[in-house]
Amino acid sequence: MVPRVRFAPSPTGGLHLGGVRTALFNYLFTKKQGGQFILRVEDTDQTRYVEGAEDYIYDCLDWCRIPPDESPKKGGPYAPYRQSERKPQYKAFAEKLIQSGHAYYAFDTPEEIEALRQKLREEGRDNLQYGHQSRMRMKNSLTLTPEKTKHLIEQGVPHVVRLKVEPAQTVRFTDLVKGEMEMTTDSVDDKVLLKADEMPTYHLAVVVDDHAMKITHTFRGEEWLPSTPVHILLYKYFGWENEMPQFAHFPLILKPDGNGKLSKRDGERLGFPVFAMEWNDPKLGKVLGFRELGFLPEAFVNMLALLGWNDGSGKEVFSLDELVNAFDINRVHSHGAKFDYEKAKWFNHEWIKKLTAAELMPSVLPLYEKEKYNVDDRKKVEEIISLVKERCTLLPDFIEQSGFFFTRPKVQIDLISEKWTNEKEEFFNSIIEKWEQMNSWEHDLLESSFKDFAREQKFKTGEVLFPLRVLLVGGKFGPGVFDIARILGKEETLGRIHSGIRVLNDALGE
RNA sequence: GGCGCGUUGGUCAAGGGGUUAAGACGCCUCCCUUUCACGGAGGAAUCACGGGUUCGAAUCCCGUACGUGCUACCA
Image (cartoon, rainbow, N blue to C red; front, side, top):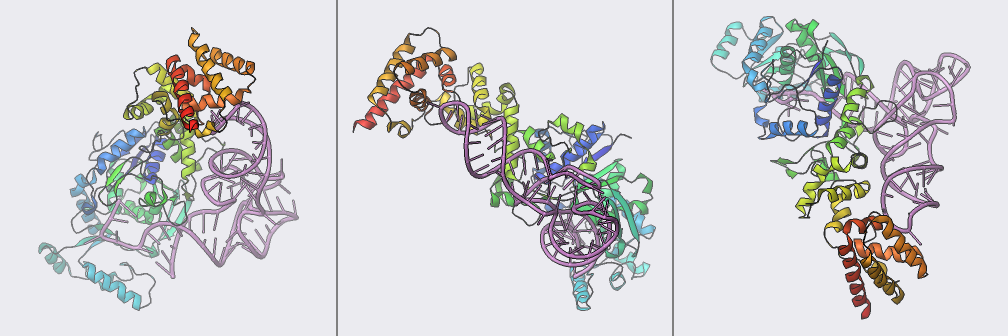
């Protein structure tokens, strides 16, 4: 059977780490078996709908290279893919449940429910729920006469539909991640299925949709584990028991500093991104994402996949294809993991090293352009990228590590001024002359001429090589000095040495 | 409070009755490179605790502690 899985976020904001990982695990699972990856937008809470959130989801999946096969935008054979568009059906299904005696109308106002809780608290009950213990004391179609119920509905009195959960039933299922599960219905309340606005709650909607869309595997975060019995009951009451999907609940991604699952606000507090991409939140304001901070999608996806899963071999760097191939849902952990930003950066570093300069070009070029560097000579840009990439962890590091190739840097003369001597100045003046006369300009020649001359002048190589670096680069960093000189070209190299000496003399002259 | 899930180094983790308890990140020392980085060699865990079961337990069972999730007309 070819799997059909769905990623079902609600459009309430930017996608954060946990959401993207759920999407990724779904994708990896289904693609390994040649199945479909479906995006379903769960927009049943009209009060929480956020403009732009749906587009953000598409962009995010695209950036991660895990686009859905079916989605609200793309369509597909099981439309609609937006729950709000299925609204009439939910009501029909809710009514079906009422007819079969598995659900009922409830007219209680929020205030009345609060009063119930208060009463239960006073009675010392530990279960403060609207459920089998308390429903017969409330205002619903179980306690009201059919006539009265009908009347209230016709009058347009606001009401909801609640699932009538029978107590003392054992619900068993196999969770692909957690293993064999067994729970009783004693502690589950009479969940609202249909809200007063006739929109379904999550519980009704997932079941109806997963069934309608022929979803074979329902994967979601661990926070849904306790309500899975409700969903199973629903499948049973609808008579869909034999078409029930398999469940798996993924472990939570936890805050690095200890308590609770990672939330959208933690990024700012702890200094790392939680969103995949920039998100302009109505409440939080503009928040940068992994993408804007200079993460490659390859690294982001790789890092996410290893948060709660590994293939057991110790291998950590995986391409998307490799992940698809290696992924095994049985190896997904059943416990949460604290997010480690340092490790996330390590993955990015690994990917920058792993990709070729040509592959990196599309990511780096825009950064150079933003700095107004002259990037006309693409061959040269590629060379620069390949020369500095191993010292770049995040994409913006390329500016810091290679900016001196494009603009003449301000030389940190204090690095060399202390040991600067007349002999050294003479040495560099002679080097300028020597190199001036060379008719070819390549690495080995530059190196040998420099080192030979240093030896001639009784310098240890380092005594003059280090100053040369600082003169060309501006500071003590960067790739091999002669590679730098080579790429800089004769004119610029000699110019930098020349002006460097002058600056040095000016500084020491006083 | 009730119910569920979990617990191997600071973090991510392998390992599922007999191992010197892998590996990675981060940290520290050294080597290489007369820069930084890369690369290389090292350093740091009695597997939450207490009881069992067993010749033998990180591995199985029970309890405790701790963590975490759910307990909304939010998902």
